[in-house]
Length: 75
Image (cartoon, rainbow, N blue to C red; front, top):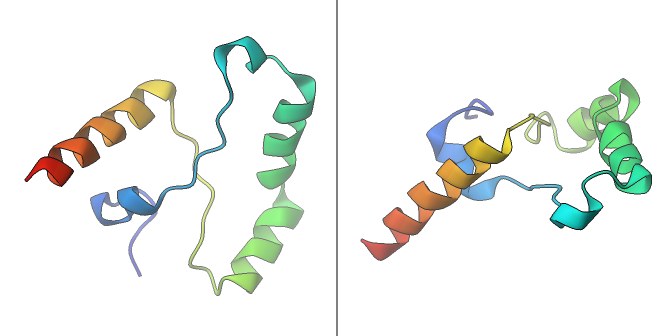
């Protein structure tokens, strides 16, 4: 199994994203907070046999991954 930070998993990252106008939306923030909670992470670990992991990426990191994947797709 690959590490969550490995380049090999980047094409499979699920991103919780919102429009700029919704970046401070309390409901969306709560959903992400709950997803990253210990209880949900424990259930996710059990349900996916420790394959899926939550990681935090900055907007800059996400854009870099998008750029890298677009370049790979062009090859």
